[in-house]
Image (cartoon, rainbow, N blue to C red; front, top):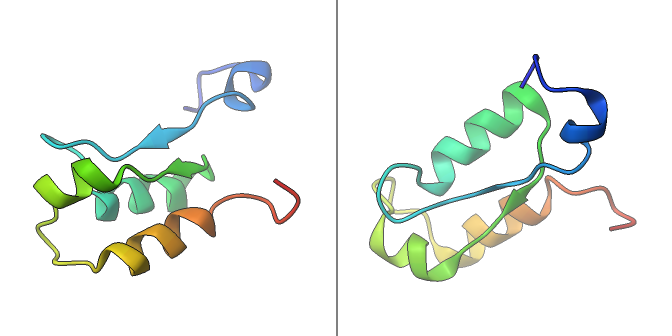
Length: 69
């Protein structure tokens, strides 16, 4: 992230997946980088080790975006 040029960082988003990165991991990465998150409900249904409710996960991901987007 730190090595990416600003024009690249402005375009990047992260999405939870069904193998390696649950929502809790992407939220942690967001906390370190500020990168916005996309929520994939099907991936969340498959990989959710924290047992985070879907509605809660969605709200937390939405909160990573600026209010005007």
